[in-house]
Image (cartoon, rainbow, N blue to C red):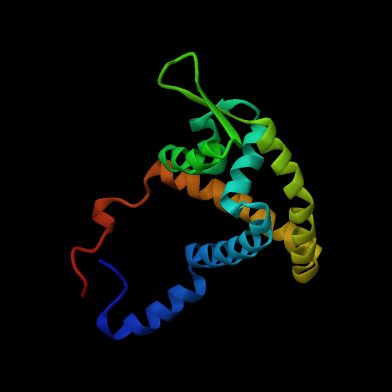
Amino acid sequence: MNNYSKGKNEHAVQQVVEICVCHAVRKASRAATKLYDEVLSPLGLKATQFMILLVAEDLGESSVSALAREMVMDSSTVARNLRPLEKNGLLVLKTGTDRRQKLVSLSDEGRSLLYRCLPVWQETHDRLIASMGHDNQKDMLRGLQILTAAAQINMARNVIRDEDLPLSAE
């Protein structure tokens, strides 16, 4: 049984839009991604590619699955995003000790590009923080860490069970 009836649906939708964590996070993510896409474009990267290079450099040589875990992404999605970076000579992919395992690391060219991107990232980051305030940034980052952990815990628990889902729209 759900709490939504035909008469309450319009109000319910408005309320969900106002309080939905997923909606707010995705909206903020799209806005930030557009900004970083714009500033990184002259260097030939998109924000998602910059993040992959950044995390790959931070991890050092690691498996695609380790990179995916760190980025909280599906391994197949990460693998798909690695292909253009490898094709452009920014990443090196090689087979691990287990033939099924792929190891990823930055090439010298990828590291050089990443380091050229850092001042652009820093300038953009500084502008964002100036716009939102340092205390808000600290609170937001802490909140996002808590949200990430809570979402991962709930994914592991599979908190939405079939019996929780409505059989049909009422």
